[in-house]
Image: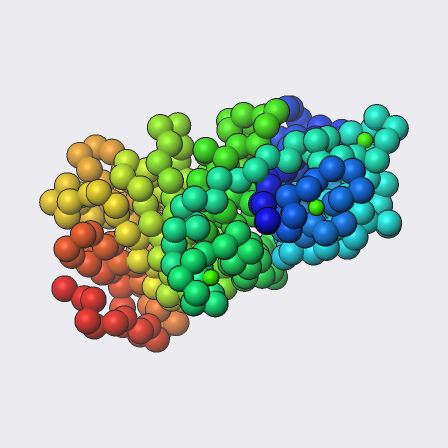
Length: 325
Ligand SMILES: [Ca+2]
Ligand SMILES: [Ca+2]
Ligand SMILES: [Ca+2]
Ligand SMILES: [Ca+2]
């Protein structure tokens, strides 16, 4: 029976301090046997710096001049940089003189319950969602991240990749933090990466959490749990204008339409506030919106239980009028 694990190892030498030293990735094992000699059946999802793929040999691209964020979307254990069976790498990442084991990599079983109950992932329409189907959805999401991002040490990194892939199947990294580490040790714990095309991610509530959401394109859904807060960040072109085209629908779980105000903030930001507290910031919203025709394609909608509140222009966008109120 298939299990999915979240795993980490120490980046060596650790850059700066211990809060940035964990490489995070995801593993599927089809028979849940992760003992030595039984790992070649595994596959791996991970993100990494394109010019420093194993994360263990310095930080040539920080600060500035970043390489691409390279995605492995379900590579085999023999092919992945993180595979325990890759003949082309020395897998002794913890440098104890022996090939690393699953335990050395802190494999921790992910609680798949939220995904197993979501029929969106019942790809074979047999009425049940299996762990393999959840993994397939995770691989699809990882694939949709390929080629979209430059690696960023503090935000668009391996951790953000794993956190985003989990979020894409409705799983909260905050309650699936792997053994031997704590949530606050992951600098990328609060970063969501939008994939190409239509995507659906959840920003989970945590009292210490403020999310950054990097959006790219598509008719996207961003579920914001009650009292979670988020900053929506567009890729900017060389003129400082948004490259985003599409519609982001922010689904405000548990908020009443009357609770929140849509206001213009400083720096051309669009804000969604409850009293003095800001829950959604759309960076540079007004600046980009008023620029070229193409940029008027940028839109955002706020969806409450009984109301959709939409900002932006119709240009080049498709909105299902049956859902507009
Ligand atoms: Ca196995
Ligand atoms: Ca070792
Ligand atoms: Ca199924
Ligand atoms: Ca998208």
